[in-house]
Image 1 (tube, rainbow, N blue to C red):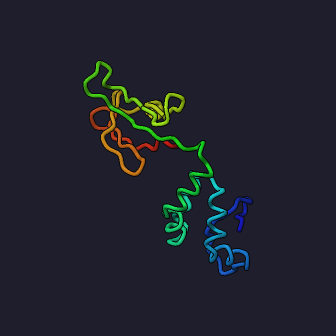
Image 2 (cartoon, one colour):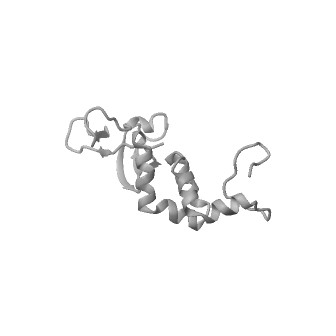
Image 3 (cartoon, rainbow, N blue to C red):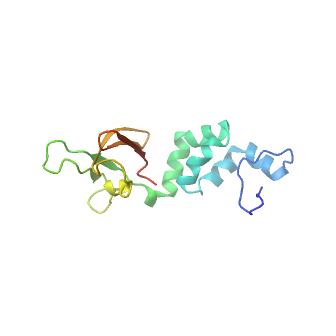
Amino acid sequence: MTNSKGTLVIGYNSSEHTPATELIGSNVDILTEILTCVPAKFVIRFKCVSKDWFSLISNSPFSRNHSNRYPSALFSGLFINPVTSFDDEKVKSVSLHGQHQSLPTSSLLDGVGFGSGTFRIEDSCKGLLLCLNGPTCFIVCNPTT
């Protein structure tokens, strides 16, 4: 289905279902093949289409298959907030793929414009970082976007 602007609408609620949409929606193999061709940023958004899509996308074999198809989009590493260095206000990143891979650094908070301008990572959950910028300004950021 497309909306009035001509963009594709996934999960469109309508009483007019075509045989093609019913076939794709009911066939996990076809849906899996289609979703493995979609970049991860959009696949994650599609988790909210339905419980079936959420279950499929959250499935470990689907994630592995998608990761194998887009290996260059992956990065892994650690964000480190040193507490005993002279430069302890700076968040560092260390890649787990060697020297040639880079991770997003503290630039992900550049231009936020709140707090004292220095920040530290307070916590993390499911890829999101909870940062403290100044004494009372908390920021949740996603370093993959």
